[in-house]
Image 1 (spheres, rainbow, N blue to C red):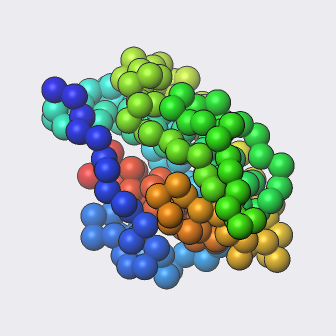
Image 2: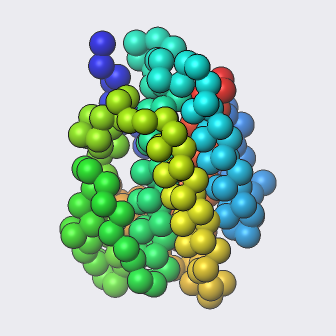
Length: 191
């Protein structure tokens, strides 16, 4: 049975704690995001050495491998989105299902291109990837996103960008939103 696509709008995690993983946006400083990104990506990467890393725990839940491949791509996309929001040089993340060419601007505020994570999971065959390779790529992608967040000047933390659904982020809120995704998926795998 295929995984049901996640269509929830998770932006509420910027206002209150996540009851599933415990992420509390008020307890995280922007300065802590790079190290936390590295730490939690490392935790997720470590799950790929388990004997059951490629097995789904049930028909409606991704395997550790699939979550790790997803978080790798989240890191790549948020490296790009951080640069866009901060108005620094952005590098196309080359992730299937993501259209980096579609970046628009509305009233001087960049509008992020869409990314369909479920299309990417299928197109990139997350479930068939090599766990060792994904572990390395996840570590590299986490380092890149950590450097991206760490390189944003304090004066640019309030710069805004908009998602195509209308949600507006500052660089600072984008970092918190990103970090929740990583922490939540570590929780999903370790559950």
